[in-house]
Structures are given as structure tokens and as C-alpha cells.
Image 1 (cartoon, helix red, strand yellow):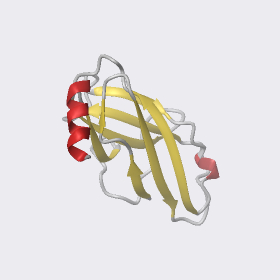
Image 2 (cartoon, helix red, strand yellow):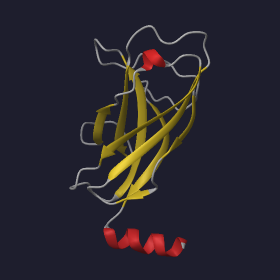
Image 3 (cartoon, one colour):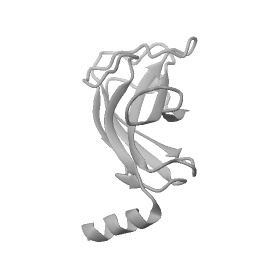
Image 4 (cartoon, one colour):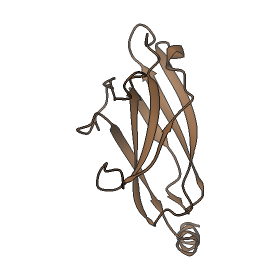
Length: 137
């Protein structure tokens, strides 16, 4: 179960998105297979090859996820040529042999391809980002 996900709300192209996830293994044992935790960043609106901005396997070892809470963190580089707009963060545990999402999580947010999404962020140009941050001060 994913308890929380934290990350930046706005980024410029070429910056790094840091994602912190708090997960809770509510079972009685750790996973027995080395499923690959993967994060995808997609432009709002789907999963065609054009809409996947980045697809990155994390270095998280889920075999160590004993019952209880686990805080995991990773950073993803946003390509410098990324167009401004809204982007959605997706997560899945992939089968190490066929690369398909296999684990159902105890949370809502699953799409038709068995990826989970809970959050989004905006890519903005530098001028827009500076104006947005000034308004919040």
C-alpha cells in the first residue's frame, strides 16, 4: 500500500524530479520475487510512446520490504527539451522476466495497463516558474 507520495509541484525542463514514497507492506512477509519498481512520467492524456516522457527503474530492493512502513526515494531527470504542460507520475512493480506490471497494490488509481497514478506536476518555463514562486511568498 502506498501511504504518501511527495515531489515538486513545478519544474523547468532539464531539472530533476525527486519522488519520496511512503509504502506499507500490510502482509505477513516480504515479496518473494525481485519485482522491478518502475516510475513513468507521462504527459497528461495517456500512455502512447509519444506521451511517455521517462520510464525509469528504481534501485529499490523490494525483497527487503518486510511487513511495515518503508520510505523510498528516487530522482528522475526531466529532459531539457520537455515541453511545458501537466505530467502525471505512474508507478508499477514489473515482472523481471517480461517487464509487465504484475503486482496489484492495495490502493486506488490503477489504469487499464495496471500502472498506478496518484499525482501530477507542471513543467513550466523559467519565467513562469519564477512568477509562480514569487506569488507564493
